[in-house]
Length: 445
Image 1 (tube, rainbow, N blue to C red):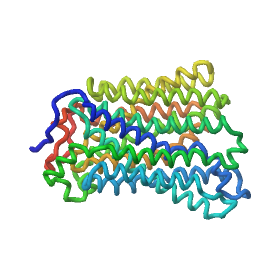
Image 2: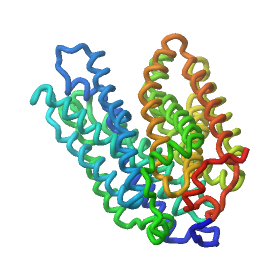
Image 3: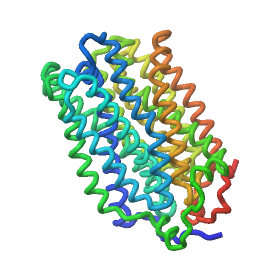
Image 4: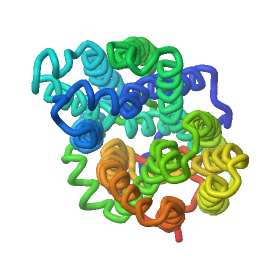
């Protein structure tokens, strides 16, 4: 059995720290570009569709264009992961941020329906699809890149840091949207100031490209290149044929991740305002605090898995998420002064979003790791990201506590997916294996 040679020291060297910080910062800036759209769907609906169309229909059309980005993720993820497993992780990460920055900038410059008619929403849809293709390669590529730069015993920490970058992109988007809403009136925003966040996203993309120039290829892929051991077979075929259980466990886990983020963070403010008639300012402030707590919690949860193992960390964190979400909805209904602390606790519980990528990077060998993580995460995101908003909105219409029940049910499935995963705390020499004959996923139940 051939293995990658690794450093024996258990502390990240200065170059490793720089690499991981730059990678997570680049991911945060790129994810900002992807999510900023959702904060301006109401304005986009009014500007990019005819005035004769009912407001509710324009809103649905705008959300449909937003969802198109999720639908395009699997295509981008599979294609970019294929070349990431054959040509290198760094190249695909650089390409992904370029593919994200260009359409974001173009959205900020795009004429509206009033100027160019139906060409406006069609171009908007095209740009959104390109964004989806870009993020389909960025998120899994970032996790694989971080994991393969990890020193011995620090896999969870590095993947948690990278996940924090994704959550940081959501936080930056929330802050920019809140800043624009606070600085300008609704009329001013509609008249042109809505473009600022997208133009800013283009600038962020240029910064992200500059950061990526300082990154080095992962030691794992460099060793693969030296040994000429890049997969000669179609990586996706290897994943589907030899890693079925790994793929199922990873898809389940990533689906729950997306559901939790969608319901608690992205849909949370709108649901709480509509169901409990809470003031937008109080809900948005609590949501920002929860997102900040989430960014910190992902790093802490990832680091904890290095010390205690996946299962010992997953159970208390996921139980905290269930309890905090119920507390959030009960406080919204009966004791609104407790909304902020319960939202922060929910954000801490959502730190469990660091677990699915840790599961996935451990589940697939290095020859097809990028493809395995990308396929699992993007299929899950396309299904969960596309269906969760509609399903949860329908559930909330039946009973205003149903979103909390939904989180409890999905979290139970999340725990099941975690229990299906390997339970060892791998050293680098154990999990960075290159022998293609070791491609079968075996659980240590």
